[in-house]
Amino acid sequence: MRLQQLLSVTRKAIDGFGMIEEGDHIAVGLSGGKDSLALLTALRELQRFYPKKYSLTAVTVDLGFPNVDYSLLEDFCVEKGVPYKRVETAIADIVFYERREKNPCSLCAKMRKGALNDAVKALGCNKVAYAHHKDDAVETLLLSLIFEGRFHTFSPVTYWDRIGLTLIRPLILMDEADIIGFQNKYQLPVAKSPCPADGRTKREYIKNLLKSLNKDHPGTRERMFAAILSGGLKGWEDFNPYPRRPSGPG
Image 1 (cartoon, rainbow, N blue to C red):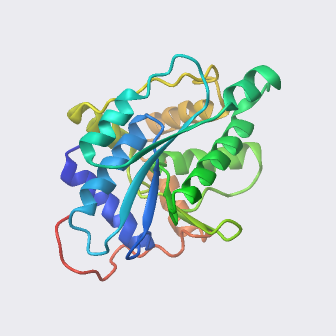
Image 2: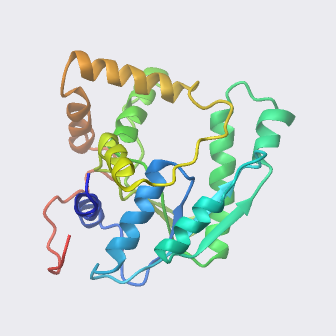
């Protein structure tokens, strides 16, 4: 995938779900994975010509795993001209060593989100951008169906009135395969996850299940995403694929 394609799909989601308004200060959750690096790239490049002016700050939540080098992320942000903030926490110690959670993902995600939101508010941001893509939405739907018995996935835009923050997911219309292609083409500085549970989660099981289904029945992933768009789920019903907007590149 070329940069122009990344910008086109990202802008379609931003415009279609009304994610960005004039004067927004958006914090980009930068984990060091391919998705967050692609998201920061897209929002930075769109910033150059998007008709609604906004500012960006990249924020990394340091979970406290030893020997993790964040210099590549800092260098990446300097190259892009985006301010960078690293938030130090002891989440890894709490989850894996103090509490010894058998299923650590839920607690880790909750604590990580709390640390990120606190940092975002302190920086004066009014929005935070997550790098979830189309595959993430479908996998979350399958997780909910199989393990919770409900038809549910996250929303492209969520307003947290308790803390006065809006969460946006600008890559929500993007295929993971295209992000992998973008990563390979532009040599994004992807960092390996230090988490000991990486690759051994329910989400990884669902990811492999979806791959198998899509291999045996081509188009399964797209049909499931179409069901999300048409299923009346909160936040998804607002999608307008052909919004009126000022002319410009992308």
